[in-house]
Amino acid sequence: MSEAANQTVVMMLRAAFMIALLFCSSWAVAQDIPHSSDDVEAVLLQANGEFNAGHFYGIPALLGPVLTQATNEQRKRAYLLLCQVYLIIDDPLAADDSYLRVLKADPEFIPTEETDLIEVVYLSRKFTAAPIITPRFFVGLNGSFPTTVFDVSTFSTPVNTRTLIRPGWQLGAGIDLNVTDNVSLCAEGILAFRNFRRTYDGILGNDFQSVIHKQAWFDIPLYIKYQIDKGKIRPYGFVGMAFNTLLQYRADVQLTMRTDGGSEVPVSGPDIMLKSKQKLISSSLVIGGGVKYKWGKDFLFAEARYMGGLTRLAKTNELYYGDGTTLADNITRYGWVGEEYAMNSVLITVGFMKPIYYPRKRSRGLKGLAKLFSAKKNEGDEK
Image (cartoon, rainbow, N blue to C red):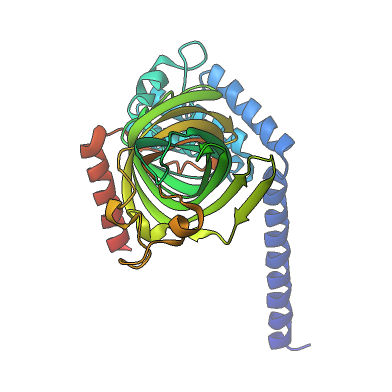
């Protein structure tokens, strides 16, 4: 075999040896990286042992491979340990970064003096993961009743009038702007279907009339909320105003004419459309409260609220006429005009909140929020 051939064989053998060595090294490294939560737990126990023994400087390298394989709970514990290490070895920037990563793993983590270094407790006061905004979605039932400003009728004699609440329902969505951990500014959009019944007994002595009011509304409540920010169950209360838009208004009117002989003659017809006789935009007072239950990182909630009407709904000049000159069908057929009233409602809702957590250094009130949004905008511009 020539010298050139011998050199070629030697180079091929060297290359094969290097490839085999590289493969074996990669395999050995792979065996050292934890592949299960039990392996990660073993490394965490080892790191805690090193910490208790005072061997601080080797802990970051020991925990490095764990961080990509750990569960969320294990990641929180690992970064909390790293935060303590960096505080001890006087690396405040790394300690801040580690604590922020703790909050990303558990946004509501709060260290205590009983279980954590006092330095970690003090450091935690510089940070928060409280959500800036909290979207929510809900559905529920309502009961509505009018506050009569004054009666308007064609009856020549006094009648016995009653108001009966009928169940309605609503669905909606809202968003909370969290000014502090306890105070939020809230806005909602609610599609609500409201009903109530009015009865008139003793018309012309014996006749009876029933009117079922059927309404559809779109409400925009705006209010301020105060809430407890700790615990599994967290009560809250709120007060504000709502702007209400009337989408549809129908009335099912039935008249029962009673004769002296005891017989009854029912008079009925199609629903009467009343939207044109009402003001489309009104306002109401909103006051209520509820409780929310922590479910993982999210919340389930139940609440009750009262919406008290502040606006007289009827257009007085249009109650009697259908087209401006001719008497309306509700008068010619039933002798019914209606009342001038403000609408009140009681709403019971259940729903789901999805806090959007954002771990960060603390800022104060609206000024801090403005700085935060400005910083987020600048980050977006740089990207």
